Amino acid sequence: MYKIAVLGDRDSIYGFAALGLDTYPVDDQETGAATLKRLADSEYAVIYVTESLQNLLMTEIDKYRTLRLPAIIPIPGVSGNTGRGVKALKKMVEQAVGSDIIFNNEN
Image (cartoon, rainbow, N blue to C red; front, side, top):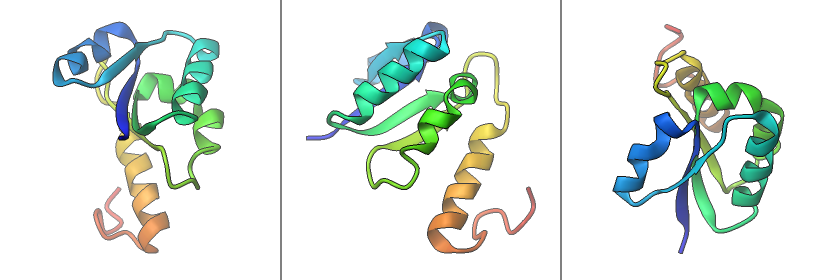
């Protein structure tokens, strides 16, 4: 059975543990990259990554973009929404569908 993980700074992700998700607090690029690789190469189908950590791990995340699993999804952290998650979602939808069916070129 597949699992769901949440990766990011401790303050942003600790609440997800109450929902039964596996949380992995990381604060730096090196630890984040190693943890992401370990999770992606195991039984995790969905990995949520805080937007601030996503900024540090773009090279590593791009390696998994064309694979079926895991889905790596950006989420806002405690510092707020930077908009990168919405932009990433828009890009993924455009890539999958072939056009912008969500935002209709608004963003």
